Length: 267
Image 1 (spheres, helix red, strand yellow):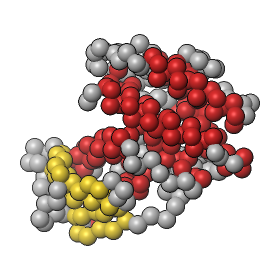
Image 2 (tube, rainbow, N blue to C red):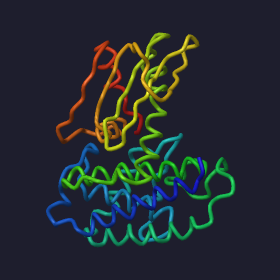
Image 3 (cartoon, helix red, strand yellow):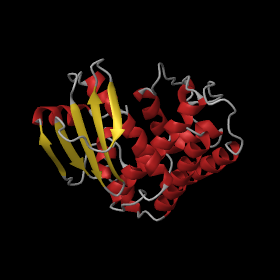
Image 4 (spheres, rainbow, N blue to C red):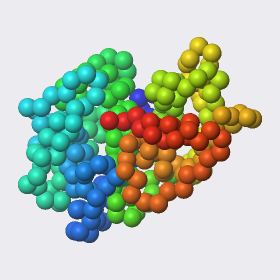
Protein backbone atom coordinates (compact mmCIF):
# COMPACT_ATOMS: atom_id res chain seq x y z
CA UNK A 1 0.00 0.00 0.00
CA UNK A 2 1.04 3.58 -0.62
CA UNK A 3 2.83 4.75 2.53
CA UNK A 4 1.08 8.11 2.31
CA UNK A 5 -2.25 6.39 3.02
CA UNK A 6 -0.91 4.95 6.28
CA UNK A 7 0.45 8.35 7.29
CA UNK A 8 -2.78 10.13 6.41
CA UNK A 9 -4.85 7.61 8.36
CA UNK A 10 -2.55 7.82 11.37
CA UNK A 11 -2.62 11.63 11.33
CA UNK A 12 -6.42 11.67 11.05
CA UNK A 13 -6.82 9.33 14.03
CA UNK A 14 -4.19 11.20 16.05
CA UNK A 15 -6.00 14.50 15.50
CA UNK A 16 -9.31 12.97 16.51
CA UNK A 17 -7.77 11.39 19.58
CA UNK A 18 -6.25 14.69 20.71
CA UNK A 19 -9.55 16.52 20.17
CA UNK A 20 -11.33 13.83 22.21
CA UNK A 21 -8.79 14.09 25.03
CA UNK A 22 -9.08 17.87 25.19
CA UNK A 23 -12.74 17.51 26.15
CA UNK A 24 -12.45 14.68 28.69
CA UNK A 25 -13.68 15.38 32.23
CA UNK A 26 -11.23 14.62 35.03
CA UNK A 27 -12.99 11.45 36.19
CA UNK A 28 -12.90 9.91 32.69
CA UNK A 29 -9.14 9.38 32.87
CA UNK A 30 -9.51 6.47 35.29
CA UNK A 31 -12.26 4.74 33.31
CA UNK A 32 -11.39 1.14 32.36
CA UNK A 33 -10.92 0.41 28.67
CA UNK A 34 -11.29 -2.75 26.63
CA UNK A 35 -7.48 -2.97 26.51
CA UNK A 36 -6.98 -5.50 29.32
CA UNK A 37 -5.81 -3.87 32.55
CA UNK A 38 -5.51 -0.36 31.15
CA UNK A 39 -7.44 2.79 32.00
CA UNK A 40 -7.88 5.73 29.65
CA UNK A 41 -4.85 7.31 31.30
CA UNK A 42 -2.73 4.22 30.61
CA UNK A 43 -3.75 4.20 26.96
CA UNK A 44 -2.78 7.85 26.54
CA UNK A 45 0.54 7.27 28.31
CA UNK A 46 1.23 4.38 25.94
CA UNK A 47 0.48 6.49 22.86
CA UNK A 48 2.64 9.32 24.20
CA UNK A 49 5.52 6.91 24.86
CA UNK A 50 5.52 5.43 21.37
CA UNK A 51 5.08 8.68 19.48
CA UNK A 52 7.64 10.50 21.65
CA UNK A 53 10.22 7.78 21.06
CA UNK A 54 9.72 7.94 17.30
CA UNK A 55 9.73 11.75 17.26
CA UNK A 56 12.62 12.20 19.69
CA UNK A 57 10.53 14.49 21.90
CA UNK A 58 9.32 14.53 25.50
CA UNK A 59 10.49 11.64 27.65
CA UNK A 60 10.90 9.36 24.69
CA UNK A 61 10.56 5.62 25.05
CA UNK A 62 11.82 3.30 27.78
CA UNK A 63 15.34 2.93 26.46
CA UNK A 64 16.32 0.27 28.99
CA UNK A 65 13.69 -2.15 27.65
CA UNK A 66 14.06 -3.59 24.16
CA UNK A 67 11.73 -5.80 22.15
CA UNK A 68 12.78 -9.02 20.52
CA UNK A 69 11.29 -10.70 17.47
CA UNK A 70 8.59 -9.11 15.35
CA UNK A 71 6.29 -7.82 18.09
CA UNK A 72 6.64 -5.29 20.87
CA UNK A 73 7.11 -7.04 24.20
CA UNK A 74 4.66 -6.59 27.05
CA UNK A 75 7.55 -5.40 29.20
CA UNK A 76 8.30 -2.62 26.71
CA UNK A 77 4.72 -1.37 26.44
CA UNK A 78 4.19 -1.46 30.21
CA UNK A 79 7.51 0.35 30.80
CA UNK A 80 6.41 3.25 28.64
CA UNK A 81 3.26 3.64 30.73
CA UNK A 82 5.11 3.33 34.04
CA UNK A 83 7.67 5.90 32.86
CA UNK A 84 4.83 8.45 32.86
CA UNK A 85 3.21 7.57 36.19
CA UNK A 86 4.00 10.99 37.63
CA UNK A 87 2.58 12.99 34.72
CA UNK A 88 -0.78 14.72 34.86
CA UNK A 89 -3.40 14.22 32.13
CA UNK A 90 -2.60 17.68 30.79
CA UNK A 91 1.09 16.82 30.57
CA UNK A 92 0.36 13.52 28.84
CA UNK A 93 -1.82 15.19 26.24
CA UNK A 94 0.78 17.85 25.57
CA UNK A 95 3.54 15.27 25.22
CA UNK A 96 1.41 13.36 22.75
CA UNK A 97 0.45 16.52 20.86
CA UNK A 98 4.09 17.65 20.57
CA UNK A 99 5.22 14.21 19.41
CA UNK A 100 2.46 13.94 16.82
CA UNK A 101 3.32 17.37 15.41
CA UNK A 102 7.01 16.50 15.18
CA UNK A 103 6.30 13.12 13.66
CA UNK A 104 3.90 14.62 11.11
CA UNK A 105 6.59 17.09 10.05
CA UNK A 106 9.19 14.34 9.75
CA UNK A 107 6.85 12.22 7.63
CA UNK A 108 6.38 15.07 5.19
CA UNK A 109 9.20 13.33 3.34
CA UNK A 110 8.21 9.68 3.16
CA UNK A 111 10.81 6.88 3.19
CA UNK A 112 11.82 5.98 -0.36
CA UNK A 113 11.83 2.21 0.19
CA UNK A 114 8.81 0.76 2.03
CA UNK A 115 10.63 -2.55 2.55
CA UNK A 116 13.81 -1.05 4.03
CA UNK A 117 14.32 -1.31 7.78
CA UNK A 118 12.99 1.80 9.50
CA UNK A 119 15.66 4.12 10.87
CA UNK A 120 13.81 4.32 14.19
CA UNK A 121 11.23 1.92 15.59
CA UNK A 122 9.78 1.37 19.08
CA UNK A 123 12.03 -0.68 21.33
CA UNK A 124 14.61 -1.10 18.59
CA UNK A 125 12.38 -3.59 16.79
CA UNK A 126 13.46 -4.36 13.23
CA UNK A 127 10.34 -3.34 11.36
CA UNK A 128 10.36 -2.14 7.78
CA UNK A 129 9.10 1.35 6.97
CA UNK A 130 5.83 -0.13 5.73
CA UNK A 131 5.25 -2.27 8.82
CA UNK A 132 6.11 0.61 11.15
CA UNK A 133 3.71 3.07 9.49
CA UNK A 134 0.95 0.47 9.19
CA UNK A 135 1.29 -0.53 12.83
CA UNK A 136 1.28 3.07 14.03
CA UNK A 137 -1.99 3.63 12.18
CA UNK A 138 -3.56 0.49 13.66
CA UNK A 139 -2.32 1.28 17.16
CA UNK A 140 -3.54 4.87 17.08
CA UNK A 141 -6.97 3.99 15.67
CA UNK A 142 -7.60 1.03 17.97
CA UNK A 143 -6.61 3.05 21.02
CA UNK A 144 -8.79 5.93 19.83
CA UNK A 145 -11.64 3.43 19.87
CA UNK A 146 -10.57 2.18 23.33
CA UNK A 147 -10.94 5.71 24.67
CA UNK A 148 -14.20 6.40 22.84
CA UNK A 149 -15.81 3.21 24.15
CA UNK A 150 -14.60 3.81 27.70
CA UNK A 151 -16.01 7.33 27.88
CA UNK A 152 -19.13 6.79 25.79
CA UNK A 153 -18.20 8.97 22.82
CA UNK A 154 -18.62 6.80 19.70
CA UNK A 155 -17.18 7.88 16.37
CA UNK A 156 -14.13 7.68 14.17
CA UNK A 157 -15.56 5.24 11.62
CA UNK A 158 -16.31 7.86 8.98
CA UNK A 159 -12.72 8.46 7.90
CA UNK A 160 -9.86 6.83 6.03
CA UNK A 161 -8.23 5.35 9.15
CA UNK A 162 -11.22 3.11 9.83
CA UNK A 163 -11.40 1.89 6.24
CA UNK A 164 -7.71 0.97 6.18
CA UNK A 165 -7.80 -0.78 9.55
CA UNK A 166 -10.99 -2.74 8.83
CA UNK A 167 -9.68 -3.80 5.41
CA UNK A 168 -6.41 -4.92 6.97
CA UNK A 169 -8.16 -6.88 9.70
CA UNK A 170 -10.33 -8.65 7.09
CA UNK A 171 -7.19 -9.72 5.24
CA UNK A 172 -6.11 -11.57 8.39
CA UNK A 173 -9.15 -13.88 8.35
CA UNK A 174 -7.64 -16.48 5.97
CA UNK A 175 -4.78 -16.87 8.45
CA UNK A 176 -7.26 -17.34 11.31
CA UNK A 177 -9.29 -19.97 9.46
CA UNK A 178 -6.54 -21.92 7.73
CA UNK A 179 -3.54 -21.55 10.03
CA UNK A 180 -4.85 -20.95 13.54
CA UNK A 181 -7.91 -23.20 13.28
CA UNK A 182 -6.55 -25.54 10.61
CA UNK A 183 -10.04 -25.78 9.13
CA UNK A 184 -10.64 -28.54 6.60
CA UNK A 185 -10.40 -27.93 2.87
CA UNK A 186 -13.73 -26.72 1.56
CA UNK A 187 -14.63 -24.81 4.71
CA UNK A 188 -16.32 -21.50 3.87
CA UNK A 189 -17.14 -18.71 6.29
CA UNK A 190 -19.21 -15.70 5.27
CA UNK A 191 -18.69 -12.62 7.45
CA UNK A 192 -21.05 -9.67 7.22
CA UNK A 193 -20.12 -6.36 8.82
CA UNK A 194 -23.37 -4.48 9.35
CA UNK A 195 -21.99 -0.96 9.78
CA UNK A 196 -20.88 1.70 10.15
CA UNK A 197 -18.57 0.19 7.50
CA UNK A 198 -20.56 -2.35 5.52
CA UNK A 199 -18.62 -5.28 4.06
CA UNK A 200 -19.50 -8.87 3.23
CA UNK A 201 -16.68 -11.31 2.55
CA UNK A 202 -16.16 -15.03 2.19
CA UNK A 203 -13.17 -16.80 3.68
CA UNK A 204 -12.50 -20.24 2.26
CA UNK A 205 -9.92 -22.98 2.70
CA UNK A 206 -8.72 -24.48 -0.58
CA UNK A 207 -7.59 -28.00 -1.34
CA UNK A 208 -4.03 -26.83 -0.75
CA UNK A 209 -4.91 -25.88 2.83
CA UNK A 210 -4.52 -22.17 2.15
CA UNK A 211 -7.06 -19.61 3.24
CA UNK A 212 -8.41 -17.10 0.74
CA UNK A 213 -10.63 -14.04 1.02
CA UNK A 214 -12.98 -12.57 -1.55
CA UNK A 215 -15.77 -10.04 -1.51
CA UNK A 216 -19.37 -11.13 -1.41
CA UNK A 217 -21.13 -14.17 0.01
CA UNK A 218 -20.99 -17.70 -1.30
CA UNK A 219 -24.34 -19.45 -1.73
CA UNK A 220 -23.99 -22.29 0.75
CA UNK A 221 -21.22 -21.53 3.29
CA UNK A 222 -20.25 -23.74 6.20
CA UNK A 223 -21.24 -20.89 8.50
CA UNK A 224 -22.37 -17.30 8.26
CA UNK A 225 -21.42 -14.70 10.89
CA UNK A 226 -22.79 -11.17 11.25
CA UNK A 227 -21.70 -8.36 13.57
CA UNK A 228 -21.25 -4.60 13.82
CA UNK A 229 -17.98 -3.21 12.51
CA UNK A 230 -17.01 -1.93 15.97
CA UNK A 231 -17.45 -5.43 17.40
CA UNK A 232 -15.27 -6.90 14.66
CA UNK A 233 -12.48 -4.42 15.36
CA UNK A 234 -12.69 -5.04 19.11
CA UNK A 235 -12.50 -8.82 18.66
CA UNK A 236 -9.64 -8.80 16.16
CA UNK A 237 -7.74 -6.37 18.39
CA UNK A 238 -8.15 -8.70 21.37
CA UNK A 239 -10.29 -6.30 23.35
CA UNK A 240 -12.50 -7.12 26.28
CA UNK A 241 -15.88 -6.07 24.93
CA UNK A 242 -17.22 -3.75 27.63
CA UNK A 243 -20.45 -2.76 25.91
CA UNK A 244 -23.33 -5.01 24.81
CA UNK A 245 -22.79 -6.40 21.33
CA UNK A 246 -25.01 -8.08 18.78
CA UNK A 247 -23.55 -11.10 17.00
CA UNK A 248 -25.67 -13.50 14.96
CA UNK A 249 -24.80 -16.62 13.01
CA UNK A 250 -26.16 -19.59 11.10
CA UNK A 251 -24.57 -22.88 10.15
CA UNK A 252 -21.77 -24.73 11.95
CA UNK A 253 -21.87 -23.36 15.49
CA UNK A 254 -18.62 -25.12 16.42
CA UNK A 255 -16.81 -23.29 13.64
CA UNK A 256 -18.33 -20.00 14.76
CA UNK A 257 -17.23 -20.61 18.34
CA UNK A 258 -13.70 -21.44 17.23
CA UNK A 259 -13.49 -18.36 15.01
CA UNK A 260 -14.67 -16.04 17.78
CA UNK A 261 -12.20 -17.61 20.21
CA UNK A 262 -9.22 -17.26 17.85
CA UNK A 263 -10.04 -14.15 15.84
CA UNK A 264 -7.71 -11.89 17.84
CA UNK A 265 -4.49 -11.26 15.91
CA UNK A 266 -2.96 -8.25 17.66
CA UNK A 267 -0.71 -8.79 20.70
